[in-house]
Image (cartoon, rainbow, N blue to C red; front, side, top):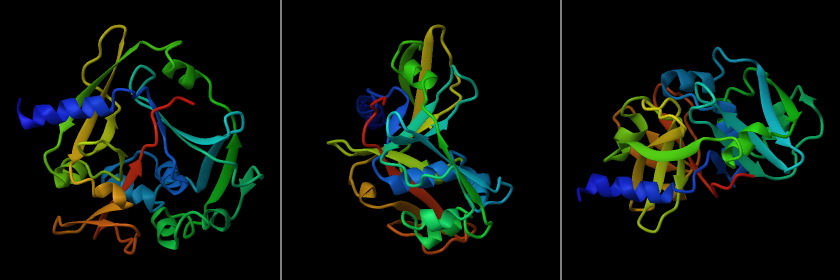
Length: 253
C-alpha cells in the first residue's frame, strides 16, 4: 500500500468517532477559535484584526450543560456542521460588557487580544445564555442521516497543509499512537449521497508528535516554519499564525 493511502487509513481510524462535536479542553484555544470563527486565508487574517467586522463579540453559554459553545455551519443543514464546546463555569454574570478586555485579559495575552482586534476597536461583548437542542440531537442520530467520513486531501508536508491553497488560521489536532493528526473539516463536500451525510477532512500526520506541544505554527515570508507558544508579532503581512487546537474528545454533550 502506498504511504499516502496508509496515511488516509490512519486518519480515518483516528476520526472514526467524529459526529460533528469537538470538545476543546483549553479555554484559551476555545476563545481564540470562537472570536476568529472559521474564516481562513488573507480575509480571515484581516477579520482577526477587526477590519470589516462587527464591533460586538459574542460568547454563548449553555447553563443546562455548563459549557461554552460555538457553532460553525456549512452551506446548509445537510452539509458539515461543527459544534465546538468547552466545559467550565461562566466567566461573567452580566449579559453585556462594554469592556471585554477586562474579562478576557485573564485568559488571552495582550498580543492575542491585539491580533483579534478586541482592544483597539473598543469592541463590546454579549454573553448569551441558551441551550442547544436541534444540532446535538441530530448528531446523536435521532434526526440525522447516516454519517459517512472520508478524507479529501492528505498533505505530504506541513507547509502545504497550512498554506498550500488558503492559509489556515487554525487546525484541530487529535493524538494518535503512530503520530498526531492535524485536520480540518470541509464544509462543502463535492459529493452528496441520498440518505448519507458525507463529511470530508483535510489531514496531515505529524509523526514526530512535536506540533501538539506548542500553541501556534508560525510561517514567515520565506515559508520557514517555527512552532511557538506565544504571539510576538501581530503584523499579519509578515507572519502566518496557525492556531493548534487539541481535541479532547468527539463526545456529543
